[in-house]
Amino acid sequence: NRRHHITPILASLHWFPGQFRIEFKILLITFKALLGLAPSCITEMLTPYEPVCSLRSLGGTLLAVPKLRLKSKGGRAFAIRALLLWNDLPEEIRFADSMSCKSLLKTLFFFYRLAFM
Image (cartoon, rainbow, N blue to C red):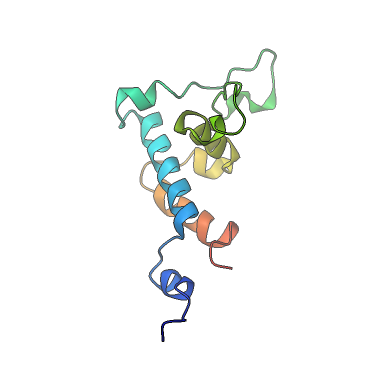
């Protein structure tokens, strides 16, 4: 039937809808850049967060997010969006090794962000 929804088929194939696929790819590129496996132009966009005073977040792998000049378009740029998505991840994913990061990200998107509601 032409009126069937594609969402159950995507879920059975373990594929993400558009927005989740984009965020997943951005996070994978960010992870590879932090490991030094991405091109230098992407790696240069990522700077570790260094707080002014001693904080509990000092030991984390947070990234510094620059101030936005234009709220409407600036937040969609890779240089901003990647940093915001990375900082929103749970610590277990940010500290993961290269072997388990991809599977942990998929688990996050399928179960915690409820990609297929």
